[in-house]
Image 1 (tube, rainbow, N blue to C red):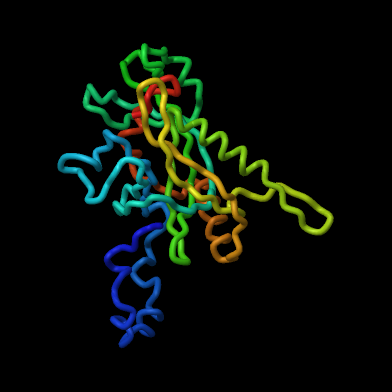
Image 2 (cartoon, helix red, strand yellow):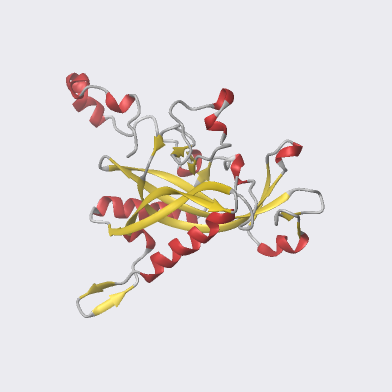
Length: 255
C-alpha cells in the first residue's frame, strides 16, 4: 500500500477551524498550471545496484524488490493501478562507463537498423551509445480512495511483461445486454507486485501483474480517460527516466 506523505497524516481536527475556507479556495494558485507543467513520476522496481540502496542517494527503508515513486520517494510492496495510455520508444543512452545519461528518444524503430548487437546483446550505435527499446505504461496509482498519475517504463526482460499486460487488456470481454465488447484499458485496475527472476547464476526483481478489476468509480474512470487523452495529445511531461533504463536485453541481466 502506498505510504501517506507527512502532510497527509496530520490529525483530522488540525484544519477544522478553516476547513470550509480551504475547500472554497481549492484550485487557487494553480490557475496557470497545465498538465504540461507537472512532471509525472516513475514507478520503479528497486534492484541490488539501484542508487536508492546505497551511498548519498540511499532512501531510508529501501530494499530490493520494493517499488519506489521516483519523485516522492514513497516505497511500496504492491500497488493497484489503472492503465491509461501506452507508447513504445527507442531511447539512446550514454553507457554508464562513459558517464551515463539520456541522449535522445526515438519513436521510429528504424533507429535499430543503425545499431549492432554487442556481446551482451545490447543495441549499440556507431558512436558507442546504447539504444534501449522501452515500453511506457501511463497509469493512475490508486490509494486511500484517491489517485496519482505515474509512468512505468519496461525494458530488457520486462518487455515480455509489457506484452503480456497488453494482451491481458485486449483479452478482456464485457457483456452489456446482448452485446459483448473489449473495454478500454482504463476500464480496469490491476494489482502490481514484484517477484524474483533468475537466469543462470543471475537474479533480479521483475513486475508481477494480475487481478484485473473493473473500475466502479465514475470520477476515477473519467480521470483515467482524461489522462490517457492528455498523453495522446502530447500534454503530459514526464520526469527523466531512471538511469537503470540502461539495461541489457532479454539475454542478460537487466541491472
